[in-house]
Image (tube, rainbow, N blue to C red; front, side):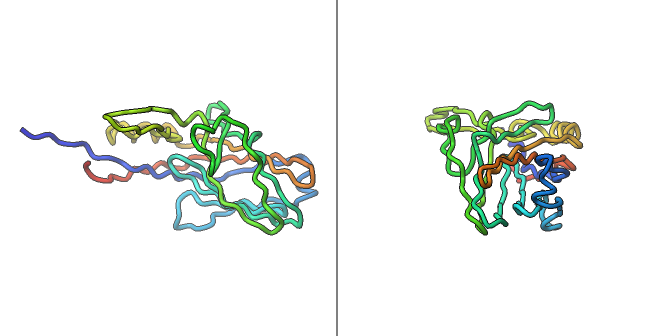
Length: 204
């Protein structure tokens, strides 16, 4: 007898940065907003820029990464305890970032300080998207990351295609509070799902 092992899939998210909300007086203080694609050959890579910061966003299946440049002559603090991720249905989640261990994700997080003219690269993940699974098959696998949209494991290509179509056009949001000279500026980034692509990685 023989058995056929189903193929596994890698999910690519084509997600566009479509808008940014800032404090009411932000345009007067920090200039107009510019949103551009940073590299047309790379899916999901977009740039936000004003006179305060330049942020390159990159979306993957399990985290949202950004590279932020401080364009000012003052230090900027990223206030992680006030940051949030909101799903398409509006459900909001606390987030944690690069360097925070999974078991510490629900604890208070110190702000990240970006010096004047400096840069920082971070990845953010909703805290509730991480589950402790413990010992499985004799191994301590410990933690499992939940994908942003499509749970791939155990699903056929046709099932995944249906789910991907359901997510097209939906919007998610990331709240990133930035403090400069004692003033907190809440930046609310809106991302829209343009497409979800499935890549067959072969049988396992």
